[in-house]
Length: 440
Ligand SMILES: Nc1nc2c(c(=O)[nH]1)N[C@H]1C(S)=C(S)[C@@H](COP(=O)(O)O)O[C@H]1N2
Ligand SMILES: [Mo]
Image 1 (cartoon, rainbow, N blue to C red):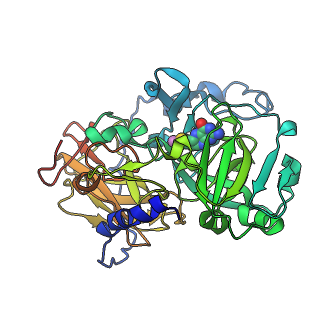
Image 2 (cartoon, rainbow, N blue to C red):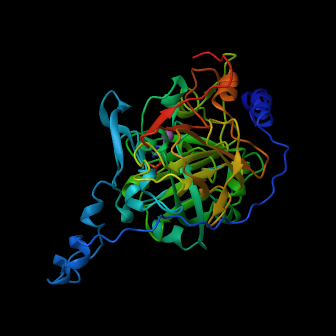
Image 3 (tube, rainbow, N blue to C red):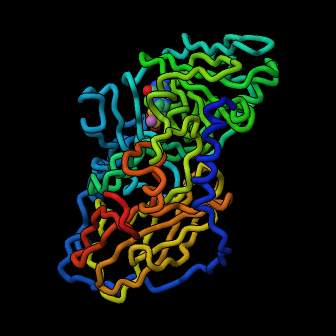
């Protein structure tokens, strides 16, 4: 570890300790409840009493779309961007956000994966792809794509989140939208090779403490990564949810660092160099450092903190036609770069009281985990919150707790609790609840 990271270790750890939770949770049973009020059969409902058009005509020829496309009725389910999230309106250096409110389960379809580029989406000819691995290794090497794929592969379901996700919200609610508040993240099954497997082959010198990863796109994005992480679980991946990476995600290969800032996961990878010191690239000096309230910035701050967000209801997906007394599901996603989600608590009163939600489906380390909480609708306005806990004991902080440490000038690693206000008309609004008189 460099001097800077040692100096800041204390700050980093104290931030984590601050949110550690000692309480032990009990696991609650699945609540089975009557969800829908009995449906009324409408005698004049065209859709049930007549043959519909598609039942009396031929459908499309079978192979009209050799690579399938979504239903035309789902045309609104797309990534969205704004020139506000670009460099001076240039959409080559910009970000497009994943429609989290439209996703089910924990896997992001490839066409909906959030995308961040600094110089546009590169299109790399796989035959011309070369990966150079050099520096403090015994056998430097240049690999073709075929050679890289000869290594034994592994698949892991992992989230990828830009550390700037939700950055605008430090100053208070900015967007009345789940997609724009939290859409700089996605979750996929990634397939590739562990870097430790390749390094077993090449031999790494004891003096090698850092690895530079460099992209071949016009931005030549580069970051340095501590060797401990490289040997622990870093991967070079070439597939995403069963198919080749999309160009937007770094085709033909990218770096994958489970649980760590997406910014470190260099796309369109071309070079890995091992060295004794960090390189102090632009992206780890002027950017991606965490400025604290004291004015001191934390450098080399890599894992994403424990986090969660309610995805239903949300501003884009309010409840509709609810009847008082009806049971309704509050759903969301939780994730932690430190490990596995152990608990998610849901509050309907802005954090005064919390009840345990249920984790559903796969619960995996460094992956999205879906949670669910059944609420009996009583027609009253709500302040909905979710709070996650991971298996390292980290608890998701409130806005007040987070601002107490970082202040209001923060940009990266925002993981404080988000509040959705559900009004009496069922519309949903992005608000912030503060529990003391913190500034702004
Ligand atoms: N070569 C290269 N790698 C890159 C970037 C880039 O612009 N060029 N952007 C980084 C940033 S800031 C993020 S958040 C992630 C985004 O990954 P995604 O576009 O696959 O979601 O890629 C990272 N890797
Ligand atoms: Mo990013």
